[in-house]
Amino acid sequence: MTEEEATAEQLTRAGWLYHELGLRLAALGLTLAAAVVVGVDKETEVVSVSIASSLPPLRVPVTAKWNYMSSIV
Image 1 (cartoon, helix red, strand yellow):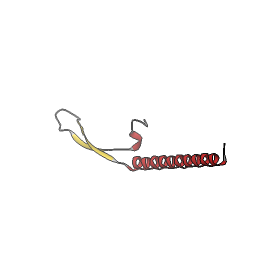
Image 2: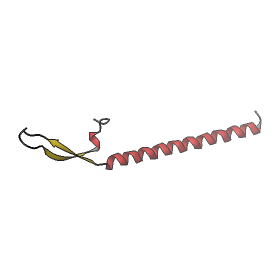
Image 3: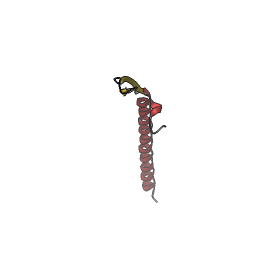
Image 4: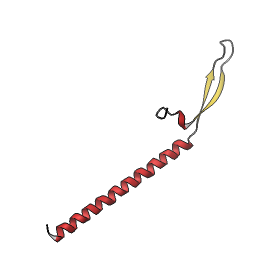
């Protein structure tokens, strides 16, 4: 292997290392952003609750939290 080929191989390895580092940092950043969005998200839905058939249903607002997600339960 000549000196020029060795230098070209080193540059190629360095380029791949920078690309890999960039991808890893992007993945870390996106993961942290997703965690923040899930942590601060609040969703409220009004649920009708029937106590007796002779009474009108009660409309109760219910707030969902991050720990109610099916992937976490």
